[in-house]
Amino acid sequence: MTKVLVLLSGGLDSRLALVIMKRRFGAKNTKAMFFKLPFGSRYSRNFDETKRFCKKEKIKLNIMDCTKGNLLKEYVNIIRKPKHGRGAALNPCIDCKIFMLKKAKEFADKNKIRFVATGEVLGQRPMSQHKGALELIERESGLRCRILRPLTDIYKIRGRSREKQMQLAKKFKISYPSPAGGCLLCEIGFIEKLKPLLKGKVSELDVDLLKVGRHFRKTNIVLGKNQKQNKILEKIFRKYGTGILLEPKEPGPSAFVKDKKYLTEAKKLIQKYSKHKIRKIIEIK
Image 1 (tube, rainbow, N blue to C red):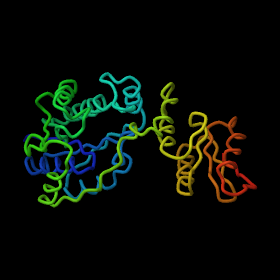
Image 2: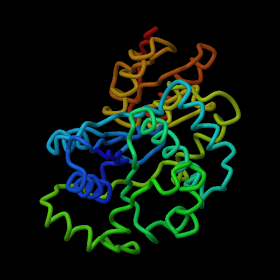
Image 3: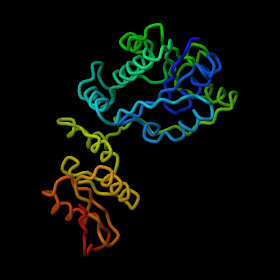
Image 4: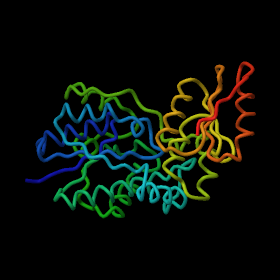
C-alpha cells in the first residue's frame, strides 16, 4: 500500500493536510512528523495540542528534535550561512524548508514511504511559498514528484486568506488553535540576543536561555522578568546542573549566571531591576 508522511506544524493548514491525506490513504498508511525547531513558532515550542490532535486522529506522530545534538548544530549552521538568503531578519525560510524536507525524505526512504505532504498554500508566504520557491525547495530536497500539497493541488487554495481553510475545518470537524506567533528569527529583540552567540558554539542550554528573561554579557547573565520566568530559570538550572542561580530573598528577579566571574555584576543587575531594595541574595550552585 502507498504510504504518506505529513509534515505537521500543529496549525490549521497542516492539520487539514493530515486529515485530507488520512481520508485518501487511510490512517494506517498516514504518518505525521513534527519538527521541534530551536527558534520556531509557538507550535514548535509547545506541541502538546499537536500530540492530542494526532491521538484523536489515530495517526502516529514522529518527533524530529532539532534543539540538541547534531541536528541543532546543523540547523544553526543554516542560520549562519543560508544558501538561499534570508527574509527581513535572520529567517532562512527556504533553507529551513529544504532542511526539514531532507530529514523527512531520509525518514520516508527508511520506512518505505512514497510521498511527503505539507500544508503549504501557494502565495501564502512571500519568501518560501511562491511558485519558484516551491519548485526550488522540491528540487533541492530530493523530493521531486514526491511532495503533495493538498490545499494547493486538490482544493486550489491560494493566497494569505484563511477563509477556505476555516470552511474545510468546519466540514471535517477539525479543531485548531488560534494563529501562533511567528518564527523567533523574525523578532528583532530575539535576534539581537542570538547574533553574538552565532560567532561561536550554540548549545542546548543557550537555546533554552534565549527564550526567557533579560540578557547581559552574551547570555552569560540572564534575569527573570517576573515570577514565572524566575521559575523557568530555576528549571533550566536544575535541568543542566551547571552555572549559578541567584535568588533574592525579597521579591525580585532571579539570575542565571554561567560563570562565577559575572557574579558581582549579576547581583548589581538584580538590585537595578528590583522594585524594592534587596537585602539578601542567595547563591545556588
